[in-house]
Image 1 (cartoon, rainbow over the protein chains, first blue to last red):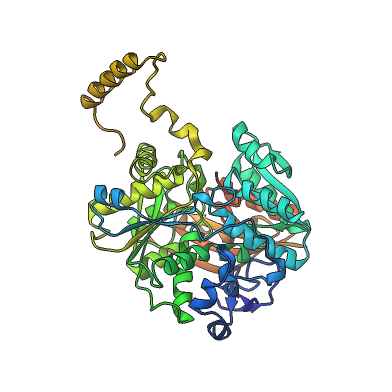
Image 2: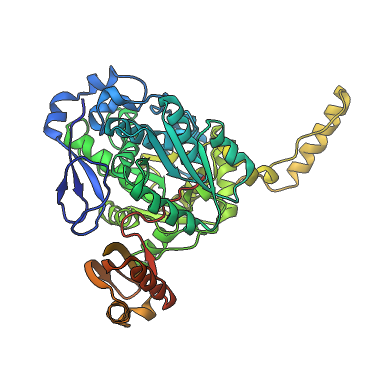
Length: 420
Length: 82
């Protein structure tokens, strides 16, 4: 069952009934789901979790919707991979990768959308909506199809065909909006106010955001019921990052793990780094930026949870790093070449920042560190396709193959190694 | 009458200017501050604007023209990336 008790303002603490609303009437602060942790502690044990499904719904007691409304495409309980080869390159002896590229629509957005659509059904909505250029759009369209709901997906009108198809295949009402990203923002905020839709990152945002906590729950369970020493997470709106910390604290609160002492670090691309910039300047007040980076899934110039992310950094003795687009590409390649995981550019940001943090000594060699890989590389092939070693082209002849192989070996011996 | 919630972000060169005072005098709009924070590098104010909708919109256009960034106070960017 669900143990949600209210919506609570993150600023002033005022509580509201569990409705599709997202901001406090008094101070306009964002609302967050509150739970009855005593009841959860009595209901949820390591054994009951282990007996649950191999999806995010194994943590159903900690998610804000009743079981009969769940929508399950098989999201979650993704692999936690021991990264020995990457760790060796970076000088990290205890490195793990949370591989969320293997979700139903190949990104961690399936977690938040699973929860949003379940809560939307519980509210009685029959239509979902979102504004996105990729991962979120794919996930909303797919989950709406599975649940038999209408979907309205708003995208800027200059998107590449591949990204349009990735959502359109599920047959949502796909709306290409003329104008800038700011224009799309404005239109969606306006529409969300007077349409009877569950707009995943607007009116059901408090519920939607809760899905990210399942990444923290899984990591703690997969590590043998403890929190890691250090987490490196990509930063876009800052929601995932703050919810990872909330999830670890909640697991401790209900007695499943000891009090976490995890240092929370965040990763951004230099071309969109409002949170990292504020961290470097020692302020909690970030300055919105106009994004200019190939890591488009992290290109949120005005992050809704930026302030809260900076507070978590301060509270946990964590940090933030940012990398250039070339470092992002090198990060994607390094991850693929050492661990066999093909990530989208956001994964390249995370790995490249992980590398910088290891080199600077921000992450200590013995710290048990978990890096989050949140989306699959086939979504952003164009960003790396011109950076790879060209294939050998030969006639169907063994001698010709041996000659070409020898030529390639000598060529590579004279060139710097790929990756970082 | 309509109301609109906004977040004004001020660059350092705008922090000393009485933008909210000026807005209230130039337009038939009541300004009601709910949260604010200002430091050396940046300042922001979350406020509610009350008046006729057209007048509120005109006041927001003016605020942008004088160099203030205007956003929804809670949501940040709504469009999510790839």
